[in-house]
Amino acid sequence: MYDGKFTIEEVNDPEVIAQFYRREAQAKRNNDWLSTHWGDVLPQALGKFLAVAGQKAFVADTPAEAWAMAKAAHPDDEGAFMQYVIPTRGPRIYGNQWRMVAV
Image 1 (tube, rainbow, N blue to C red):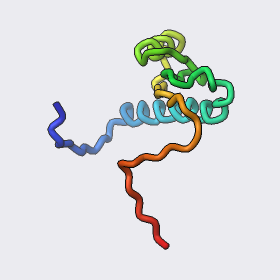
Image 2 (image 1 turned 30 degrees about the vertical axis):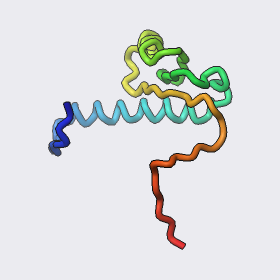
Image 3 (image 1 turned 135 degrees about the vertical axis):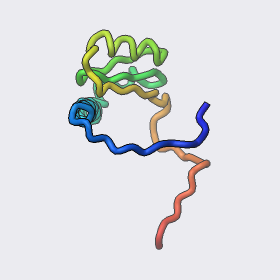
Image 4 (image 1 turned 180 degrees about the horizontal axis):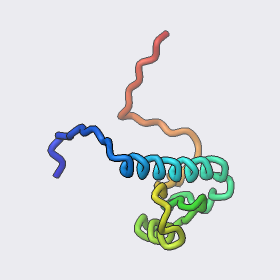
């Protein structure tokens, strides 16, 4: 279980740093692709799990299924990600978040 503690370490290994930048670049490509292809993904993704890998969408009823499809199609994509697509469209109100606005 998470005990609330964390450790900050300096990373100097060039291979670890290169791997981080590789993953970050892949994730950015996948995110950029999704931001320009939401129209292709919706409405069939509403209420389902969406995984993005290799700049392609994989929609399934369960997170394990969506992730398995994405990894099977693009096993080398280390920037793949998954999210649940809320089934309702339109604005959402989050009652548990307070924001101060300077007037």
